Image 1 (spheres, helix red, strand yellow):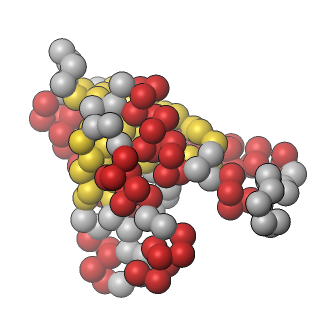
Image 2 (cartoon, helix red, strand yellow):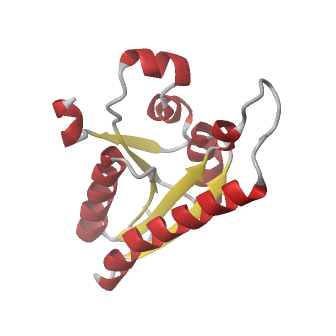
Length: 154
């Protein structure tokens, strides 16, 4: 913990699981103090249509994705800031797995990563991988996986 509480990284992807993770981070910061680093990663691999090569998409598509993500992050952070919480927003490009597990914790001095448990089925996780599983195995700090109430309905 820092002298002002804990530094928490929450990866945001617009899902109900990510929303549950943010709610848990807010509860912890309200109870113990601290900072929330709200992160959205634009996974550039999803924009590639050719195998083994870089992005095959125009800059306009990436720009639009960046603008939408920035608006979403700001919309989530502002009500929390009005409550007096310190919330930083971050937008990164790259592999979600490596940015959340390696880059962001180092860059933001993260002490705790909170992720929502996805409702993806086992077959999907086998092919695209689980960001949460990768982060749990590789992060340099504690990781909390929050149950997603909507996943039980799947």
